[in-house]
Length: 80
Image (cartoon, rainbow, N blue to C red):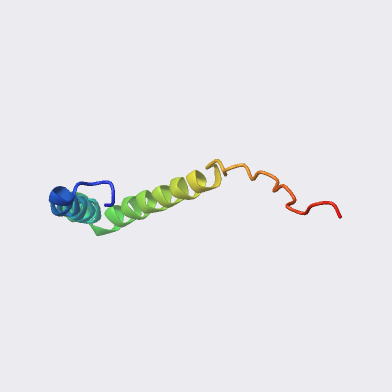
């Protein structure tokens, strides 16, 4: 937000919310459509597996992120 020009911040937030709502509702809509074609139990297994795989991918991605290297701090003491 701070990098966006003041005249375009509302459009940026609107786009952000649209993307958030679409990402949250897409799996639920696909699950509802799949339930009509495949049935409740198979859809539940597939939906649950997808959620578990996405969670695992996020977990592995978090573990494999590079941590910034910490630099040793120089002592600010002056010899007495």
